[in-house]
Image (cartoon, rainbow, N blue to C red; front, side, top):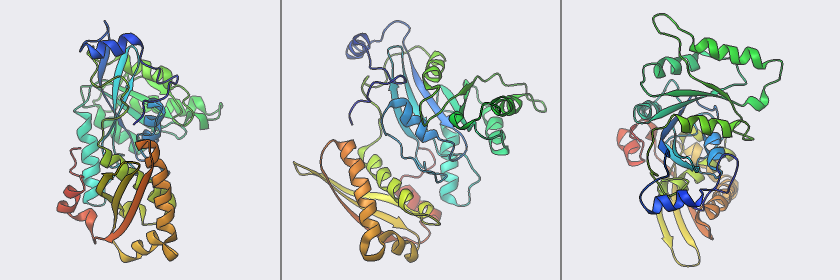
Length: 331
């Protein structure tokens, strides 16, 4: 994967930072650590992740519960290195897969140096946000709050919306008020992200580079490729299909001028298979074409992609199948 292009939120590492990494040291006062992005489904965590690192490392979709794995993105500035952990949205699960996803998100909270709670700032604080606040109130790590989608907020609504989140952090019952900083941001256009990065970095412990300065993700290529295919399924299908889909990369072959990728798309019912394939295979070709275009950016070269669709009834409720697909609830 190519290094992220320079941007306001992702300035290029200076010579000191790069040299320090090569020497196994770091500049005086350099900070590094892990930051978990948590929040309800569809509040823009993956979009913010991509905005911060300046490169597509997480799939996005208007469909809720897009993220299924803890995905780590790496943001390096001359002063700090932030390892950003994108977690599945915290929601009320309706099957074993949902339980594993929520378990994964909650597990990440106890394994990081800091938490960024992302909320939909264009909406008043809701009960789902309150549930997550109470969950985070029991943690010992620093928490900051990002009011996302602030570009959608009308000036005459800003004060009322922000006040609803201040009220959410106020003391409730025996809980003391929470002095968590609030940041107005837009994951879509980058508004407020530079100051957010500085605020997050200031709360990390002092430490060396954890990854090379030009790294933007530490995820296996196989996982990233599978996610790019699933993103195209989310883009091209609706109704019950998106949540019933999983992708397995069967084989990756680098045969010189191009990379060949063979993948299987799992669904739960024959009707879903029919939707994915489409009349005369048209839908599957569109999904494959979109995924191949994204893969070529990731791999930086031509890609041959072959897709198969397989019906596996009830895979979201099968512990063995979920483990095979990597949904264990701890990663």
